[in-house]
Length: 286
Image (tube, rainbow, N blue to C red; front, side):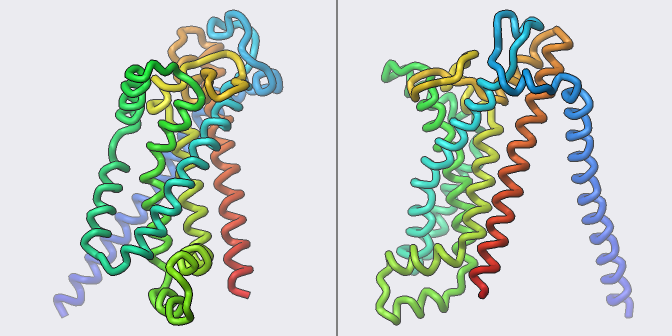
């Protein structure tokens, strides 16, 4: 009787703690969104979205953040595609070819987790050191490679968790029907794990487009829209950082306007990916 009462009280306490944590997260998110909207909405207009910075932009002059918007999209899309080329085969190899080697699997996962935990500034510093050694300059390509290395552990582990959810019976059934491990990986496991893989890609894209530290030394910064991979590129996070560093209130407002644009881009991609994942899951069940 005493143990039953104690467990009920313990359960109520943990439920209250979880509810408080959820409410705290929602409140913090609401405060962040309300802050950037309140401070950035007055500066958000068509001109700032469709024009590049002009002379004296960071001192209150005219112009916009189109260069940073397109630069962020170029960088995030390029890095996500490059990371996908690395991550998808790695996750499939980890779950198909190394399925019988549990200790090796766990070791590789531990290494990937360590790489995931390394701050993005370390990736940027490493890439900058390599660039100096080979005499390379800051460019869109350097930024894409750096960010791809940074988000690859995130993408691999996300895909790995999705592939681990595929029933083991499907693996055995595919092999018993004469499928090779390659066919089992790309025709069975990949199809079953599409929603989880899409989530991993979106999570990686969000980290790629929103990170400033990893590209601080590698992409450079420019007021122009890059026309080739060897040119420097501006990004929204760096634009926000540089504009918030200005003592001019009007320039700081533009930084919050850029933050609104960045938040909307991530929200749009996330919602679109979620819709596609749900749609694919429904079609797969029919």
